[in-house]
Amino acid sequence: MSNSQTVTLRPRSEEDSELLFEIAADLSTWEERNPSTPAPLSRGAFEARLAQADADAAAKSVRFVIDVDGAAVGSVSLFEFDELARHAEVGIALTAEARGKGIGTAALSQIVEFAFVRCNLRRVHLQVIASNLGAIRAYEKSGFMIEGRQRQHAWVRGEYEDIVVMGILRSEWAPSVFTG
Image 1: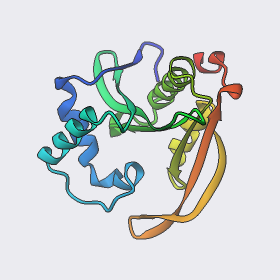
Image 2 (image 1 turned 90 degrees about the vertical axis):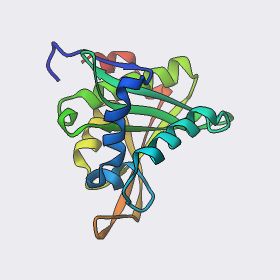
Image 3 (image 1 turned 90 degrees about the horizontal axis):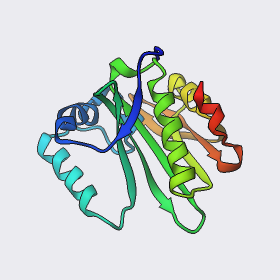
């Protein structure tokens, strides 16, 4: 990421709908974002899913749009909150043009800070396909550590792949780590 770019997290707006639909409907990265069988996603099904997520108070989640200098480039969310054990899972999705530029690392750093400071979580975790080395590097730069591996757990483009489980504890987190 260039020093002149500012990455911020903000609420979703109507103007973001097209970009978020394109990310969600992208079959080339489906398995990286979704455990279900790849299938074409219609605009109507996408909008119904968003409306249901907004209306479903029982499925607590915190969703942000990732913004770079005023333009949406992806989304990041906390979900599957465990109120007793104080942890949640994080997920991130970026446009192809935004990947590999430090934008994901900056967004993850912000959502981790939000999780620990604003949501009072003690652990944030994620799952990533083992072959997604760029994402694993970004997660490690954001302070996540590899905690384990689910062997041949995902069917990805014609073969089984391991899922890498990564996490960060509040006790390991330091805001100064994320200023660089």
